[in-house]
Length: 388
Ligand code: GLA
Image 1 (cartoon, rainbow, N blue to C red):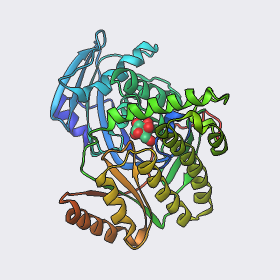
Image 2: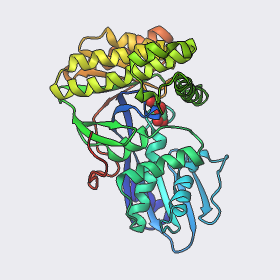
Image 3: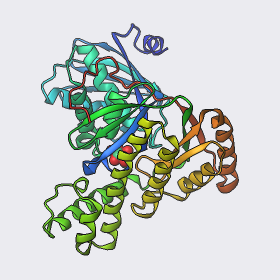
């Protein structure tokens, strides 16, 4: 129990306890920073926090996973290269204060079972969890969309990772037994029920996302460049979300081969998400699985963010009985695949993929049979934006 652990470390009982989940994206990859559509779900792996208010401006943070502790003053919040795990919390405290929320010092303990650097958004869980914790500790009123925005700001402007909004949004606003359909242009969203007779099975390739940060930035820039090039042909667009395949046909001469491929992925992926939501609502899981498979092909061929390990996991998955769809999930270059598997086949699926992966690459995959779960703000998610 995190409360007891807190007591052992700081010698008192905590004033607040919160939990923030990791996430898996079912479909809609590399679309969020293109103003597009995504369909993630929060998972039943969480980071837990316990904390106690202090009367001064000191923040003491103990990480259970790193078995390490730091302290910093709210008056001089700086990035810490020796304890990078602490930067997510530092960034959150910094921007809460900068945006006028009244915070004080505190003692914090946190840790959990969202695997790190596996593409399941452990960093978003720490950021969103830290905002939710501060809300409880200091009685702050932040609307759910503000929580996601501020958590992302910590990642973009303090940790300096240029991610989109998807991870922080689903971590804050996930709902048990539901995926979340989000329009990243205006942040309108709705929860879509997931059917009980299938399981979301996540396979962790065990390969750290080595190239993820540099290649992610390259993709981001390529998308911006593609928009700029397309605008020179007279298309009045602000993002790749606003282009359809017919426009692209007409304007394709303005793009290099690489930019054409990146653009084609984003356009086709947005279409897939829209169809995926439609078929999920109708209960057509076979079609949903086909769309997941097509998403993987597009990420591999056109967006070029898959890896050998991810491709092997996907191929192995598709050979198993009861599998509806398999694809890489998250930024790519390592990390995890997500698979939609009939519930009664999930256990044998997990064993077979683990075994096959070991045989093929002499690597161990961790398999998580996940439940779509509540986000960190479950309970106060009155809808702020319009519904999609
Ligand atoms: C990472 C980023 C997200 C999103 C995905 C790719 O998880 O944090 O914002 O861009 O990659 O879909």
